[in-house]
Image (cartoon, rainbow, N blue to C red; front, top):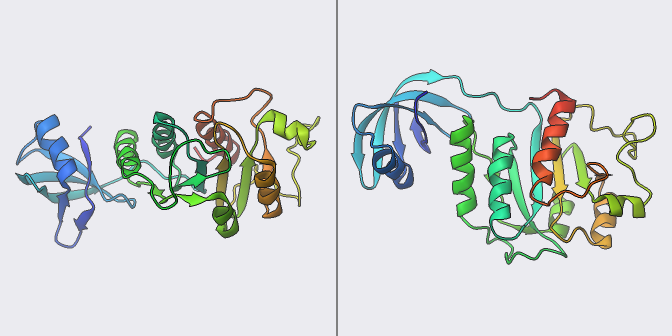
Length: 255
């Protein structure tokens, strides 16, 4: 398989594209590629091409598009991961894995129990770089959008997804009399909603290491979020998103 690069400047009519300085550094210094070598480039929005390197310079590389390629298919359900910011490299891992699982958007949230130091609107640029690297590795031609960082109240007030799921810890679910599954194996939901039917769009709301506050849970439910758990065991906060996305995609047959 050809090495893949994100080309944010793509001109299909002129069959040209340009790689950024970072991508060019990877092309030339890491992979030791140069003019004449064939590569694959994708635009981050769903299109991919077989291409040839024409010129490599410090500030960028110019390539010629040879033919359009078929990238890995995107999930049918547009999933937004609204993730409470985690400490250190845990959030990096969430961005990497969520990109690999095909989410459309990652929204970093500042919540009542958020320990990581993140001011609203100050999401680090490295999360986008991690998403790009993950998209390259898993052969997606789409790079998910990374939110700038918003507060929990602001997010739940503006979320317009067709299905909104609040993931809770088993202890929090028991406290409110909630259960992930009934005795008949049916998910217990309010208002007749069901995560088994693939919606047009969905939001997964995942909390921080310390869990949700009571006020956040009540606020989310009041805004139409369906509270669910992933079983009787308490998972690491950074493991929850990939497990939940995998379960939902399996139920939706959206793999």
